[in-house]
Amino acid sequence: MGISTGSHGDGIAEVVMDVPPVNALPVQGWVDLADAVREAGADPGTRVVVLRAEGRGFNAGVDIKEMQATSGFEALVGASRGCYAAFAAVYECEVPVIAAVHGFCLGGGVGLAGNADIVVASDDAYFGLPEVERGALGAATHLARLVPQHLLRAMVYTCRNVTAAELHAFGSVLEVVPRDRVREAAIEVAARIAAQDPYVIRRAKESLNGIDPVDVKRSYRFEQGFTYELNLMGAGDRHRDAFVARGEE
Image: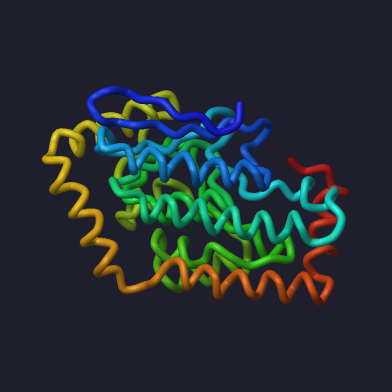
């Protein structure tokens, strides 16, 4: 359990999240994920990375229970830094990253999927940012890469979710497949990328990042500042305590 890496062969690397019960990653989990993605991309034998998960869903964000069980602000800062590192690792990975999403993709999960190069999802997948209900802000930078601006704002303000089918209609999810085929579908797309000249693909990734209209690292860091403000004003703890008291997963 935790973050694991493996090879599917033919230059396809897999990074797998498996943190029961819902893949809400603790601080160290985000750090480990960032390291795993960076190491996979830096390997000269890697041509493409598939980022996926085991369990009930792709990713449920940060481990709020860990945050509230830790005195002081160490876990809050650690989670913020860990998410920043993991999202950046996906975006800056030297080769394309395919997110294979099933079930829920929430909070930090949106940060990962939004920064991926390609998203393949199961027909039961849904995406959302529950941050406002948690007394936090963040990952709107990455959600903006998945949905149009007005829907983005509605999702942030109301914490509503969108389905994989909706994102497929927008073009931000490449394929929607039955849940038991999501890994297979991601590998099929990865194989098509891996069949290309690896030097050209790495330069293509670099060039596409270079013409991106938004600096995702700077934009996300700006968002994080408001999470710290909410925490200083007491809203963060108030909403996180309520979440823990409800016993939600």
